[in-house]
Image (cartoon, rainbow, N blue to C red; front, side, top):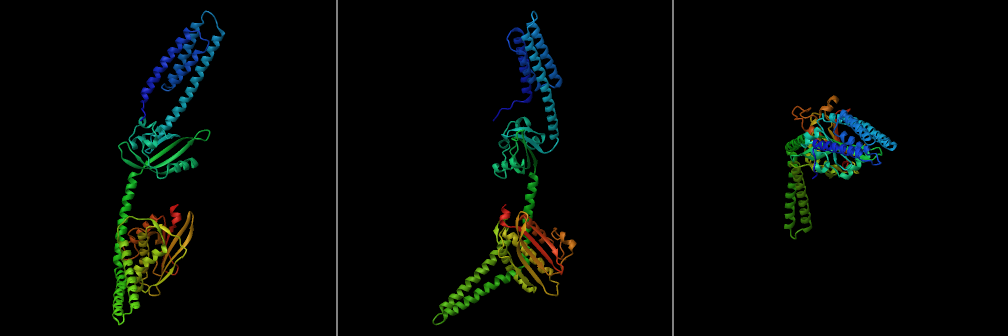
Length: 478
């Protein structure tokens, strides 16, 4: 760990060094007859003084050096005039004056930088600057408040090591993007002085020198720890609400579910009885009995699949975004609502794109969206006297950053006013008298969590169309 010397200690040390150097130069210049311009070394005194003195103090030191130079010249050459010594004296005086002017100009520039740095101290964001080697060269008060480290402890340290930075991507990729564009923005994990971890929204700006080479990077960090914790809590609450909604929907579909499980179980019993009869014959009909057993197995698997789907929809678990076929997800979901469709005398029209790309998503959550849309469509047609049609279609469409997979659910129900389209997905808003207004709101949250979009529009001839757009698996990975 590097040793950091406080600024006031460094200033005192430079002052003492300047005094000792001044005395040494004067003594050598006045008491020796070397053929060199010893007084030129007063420029070092001015440089040392510039680091700790203000403008007036620096001018005073410069005047003092000029006086010492002239006194030493007169003391050593009072009896005879030496042209070479006079030239050396003039050179020394010029060096003192030029160094003073340059130091004053440098002080002015440094003062401007300090004023600008003082403005950076007014912001609540943590701002620090690091050089090309990742060493911190500037640390504002916002950084002191956020991380707990004072500037004197931070300056000179390696930023990534000092803050125990965790990057969202490989550091090499991040630095390549910074070098290419001059900027980078993203979320980082840092560690405070007390050991606690925080999330920051970080913005990097690259500064290049006059030759175009990377010289320094200014990093601006805003604390988003509480925001991320709130989002995590919100996500958990949404997941709980989504789970409750699924269980409630399954309760509403109890009759359909009972039918879907009872039908294959009844077929199992029927085929079992038939198999026994074929075996009881003289001689036993083995082929017919085998066929009955195969039908029993097929129907048992069908009942098992229905129960597995129900358990998947009813379970509480974290979302798993995996490649899935949306056509298969729709088919599986329709098995749970077949009885609802039949009892409501609804004509089902399916139009699936056979070349549909896979989407990256959670099967259970997307099936919940499909159930919500289908049930909304069925309920919207309850009061329709004429033909009731439900059309479910999938297709592909090009998007700005790739390709989308599109699901359309169209009904011939009562529809809704066009101006109410924006409200349909609001929580607790429902066009039905006994509706909770949560199904579409949850559907929108699920679709947006899959980086997709959901929209609704009123049909010209009555009814409504709901469209879900999801990026395909290749676009989602990108």
